[in-house]
Every structure is written in C-alpha cells, then in structure tokens.
Figure: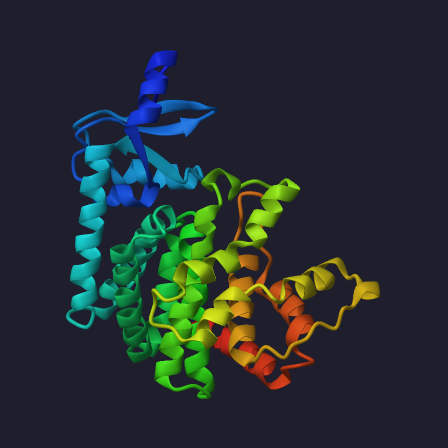
Length: 338
Ligand SMILES: [Fe+2]
C-alpha cells in the first residue's frame, strides 16, 4: 500500500532527512526503524511503514517497475550499508568454502550492490579497497569454476537490477570467460583485465543519477557522459593496484564508440578508418562492454539480439582482428548454450 505525502512541509523535511539506497539493497534490511519512500512525480511516496519488513514481493515489484532507488532514514541507511559490507567481506574470505553455485551467485550480487556505494562516494578509500579485494578474489574463483561462469552471468541478469549496477560486472564476467577460453593470457593478466573492466565506469559518479534513464540528453549532459572514462582514470590513478597500461585502458575504453556509430548509422561516407593500434586488450574490454550493453534493455530502448549485436561488432573489428572475432563467435555459442 503506497501513500503520497501531500504536505509541502513534510516533503521538504523528508528531502533533508532521507538517503537513497538501491532497491536491491533492501534485501539486506531486516526491520526498518522508519518508513521508506520512493520519489515519483517530484513527490515522496511512502512504500514501507516504519517497523515493517521489506518483503521479497515488494522488492521484486519495485525492480519490475524500474524503480532504481528507495529513500530511507539515515539510521536505516547506515545499518543496511554496514550489513552489506559485512556480508561482502565474509563471503569474499570464504568464497571457496561450501557450495560454489550459491557462493558465486551471492558474491556477484553483493559486489554489484556494494559498487553503487562507491558511485555515491568515489573518494572513499575503504570502499574502494573492499571492492578491489573482493574483485581479485572473485576473478580467481571464476577462473577456478570455468563451467559455472555463464550460470553466474545469467543469475546476475535475472536479478533485474538497474543496468548501471550490473553492466560492469556482467561485461567483466564475460570478458574473463572469453580470455580464459582463448589461452592467450596468463591468469594474472586475466585478473588484472577483469578488475580494469569492472572499475572502468567509476567516473559515472560525476553524472547525476536521474540522467541515467533519459533518452534525450542536452549537449552538456552528453559531454558529461563522454567524460566518464577520463574521470574513472583520474579517480583511480594511484589508488588501485593496476599499472599504467591498465589505467590507460580505462581512460580510452570508449575509443570504439565513433566506429560503432558509423556502423549503426551505416554512414559509409564518414569512414574515419580509426586507428586500431590500441592493442587487443582494450579492444576486448570495449567489445564486451558494448556487447552486454547492446543485448540488454535500457529504459529508453529495447535490447538487440545477440546476432544483431555480433553483426555490428563484426563490422567494427573483424578486419583488424579476424581470428579473435571468429573465436568470439565460437565462445558466445558455447557461453549461451551452457
Ligand atoms: Fe564506460
């Protein structure tokens, strides 16, 4: 049962008192001390009364309605964030103990939810270190559990979390799986590329969350989005155990965007013949980012089929990387068959 808060003064008070959490983080709430709200049509609407429990049905409904955030009191916020951190630390330390399917599925979910805290507070070193350590352990665990990689990927898709939360991890899991399948990289390199791919969008922290779902962006906002890779690089430089080479991958991870626009618009008159001299690693990080983005829905567009997305990627990279493109097609058939 929802209740719109009618009073202007009460709305104003709530705006000062409440903190946003992701809908998925409600799974970690036991009983809320105060009411929880969503923000709809510029008004706070109460969705959970104080001392009530956020039921699984309610959380699932909110996710299905594409609600990204829920607003709660500062006390409830602190409690949920600390529950999330504790759960992630505990699971990171014991990933290989017990049922790998259950552990991996839960770890991907907790890691994604915890990452959203870093988007809100990108200068928080403790949060960044927790993300880095958890990601490093996860990449080792994924490499050891090759047969479960596509299963973990699908389980995270099924959470239906907002795309900003799961996109980095989905593309990184698929990238890791592909890199392992082609036997060109050492495990250490794969682990570093996994971390690189996963943190590459931290610069989204500079973009107001309300912009994520907008179909039409002003030139100023477009510029803001275009800047996120640079911001990711600047936010992470010197704070993360990645060498300059990997930090540069973060900085230029959208270097294929212009080529993709040309392919999609079929604009052959403007074939810029962009330099592909960036190296295979960055091409693969970019391609898996694009592939996952294209094949999943956004609030403002439908998903493309895997076949359509591969056609676009083929036209972008197959001339420069024919063997790798062939390997990608074979890999994807296998990945989605499991
Ligand atoms: Fe990006």
